[in-house]
Length: 340
Picture 1 (cartoon, rainbow, N blue to C red):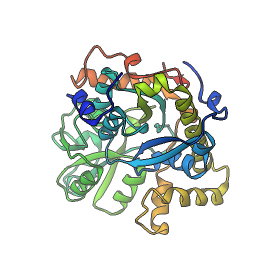
Picture 2 (cartoon, rainbow, N blue to C red):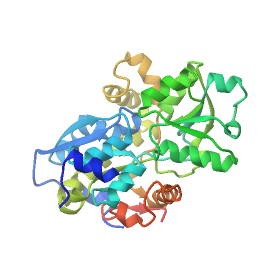
Picture 3 (cartoon, helix red, strand yellow):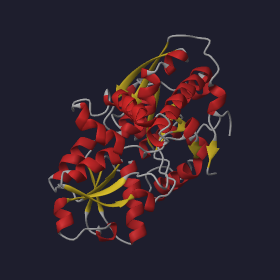
């Protein structure tokens, strides 16, 4: 069995059951669960499931633990400090999966045509120098959290499609990237719309393109857990995904399909505001939360075609071992698998 300690996890870095079938009442109650999250609207399913009692209905006593980047979350899963998490695929996550430490068990945020998704941003300095579309990013500095992050994956595909080369600047945290972009210390970045649109509205940053034009049907984030949980805690994992899927359904229905009208949107914004832009007055936070609406994968279905595409890229860049397969990385027994 994998040792569950952070030192070990850091060292490691050097068609099955549909979610709709997971909704059976939990037998055990008050099972403690730590859930990793970012303070992004894309993590709203977790906030909704907690606030509306869906985790409690599933017999789970959930505590949120917040992170500022994807890779540290993967380490926390491997070490046992966190039980489940939702974040983007990274080289670190894949490498931990290779060592038998983590498994992807479902999907979350995704790009969808017709819905504003991740935006490509440039600094005002770069924009005024003529970088008005992604084809003009050649020779520019592209911000990433870490080498092998989802930002690196996206930037590389933009560069390949446009036939250009860029330099990648790892700045570790989203907040650091925002500061560097606003001050012109880096030239470009991509990020979800609830962050991109307000930055562009400030005038210090400009939107020059959309990620979905370069990577259609991109499965941006996934739900994942330790390999031990996936293999040995099936009831708990199924119950987690069932509650999480209820949160997804509420979010998509309210914020995208508008089944509750404006009143429903306002109620949902109030809930999300407890976790996203909580340091801002509600009237300032609401437009960003609404602008950040993207589809979450219904029933936590996982686009394995997109995941395979991401794995292929990490391998082509030499960021993960070439022997890793999709089965190494994904436990496909929990949710519907699409795009195969």
